[in-house]
Length: 325
Image 1 (cartoon, rainbow, N blue to C red):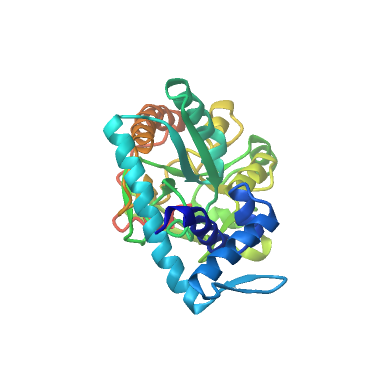
Image 2 (image 1 turned 90 degrees about the vertical axis):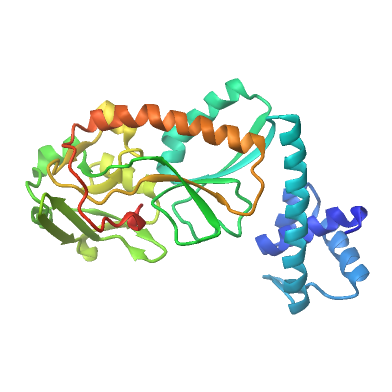
């Protein structure tokens, strides 16, 4: 790879990932005209067309698909070499690209990153909030924090903390409509359902010792959203009952904004994991941040378990962590 073409190749890879030459140019600090000229120069040097261009989309040609795969590998090798050099110098600096779920990212992670910056001011962050796992492999992410473990074997899943998931509602909703005493009673209440790429999570399974009850939320009467932060906000505004991770509602539990329902019944847990690419070199800034977050999780986890005040029941066999929200 000729070093004078490295910028053109990075532009090409970004354009392929974003599906937009202008968006790739903006990311790299180029005007649309400059980005177009650099891509044209690259195609001229290769004597092949890399994209099929229309006014609405940018689509890779067969040659472009072959070339982008090789370019991604080459750029990753260069990035890993730089990270290895920094590791040898023991430097904790640079940008960490993080992906986290919406509620956790807004309510806890943002504050923890501020704390981290007090100790490591030369580290900056690119934080993406999404409840989806679908694009983690393709995206330029150093670290993702998710509930449960994904099926993708190219990602390493490092356990971070336990995660009780609870049924909850606002005190105002409970005062107006009462509260269920067992899962089948949920049929009398409005519920809030989180949608995922595989469909709405409207089958709620509960255990109490050997007793198992499953309640399927009728979607025609439920509020649905694919954003966990919206689901939480709807619950806070008194629109119904929702299943949430204890990490998502940490602030609401402390302020009595939400109350845990059905405390004797246990919803399947979905422990928190840090996910990162198996074949990427872990730069010092990522490794140090991961250790910092692990320590913060350990500290706050005990506080949250006590705050929930739930009985410490042994999870039923076959707990479906992959259903994590």
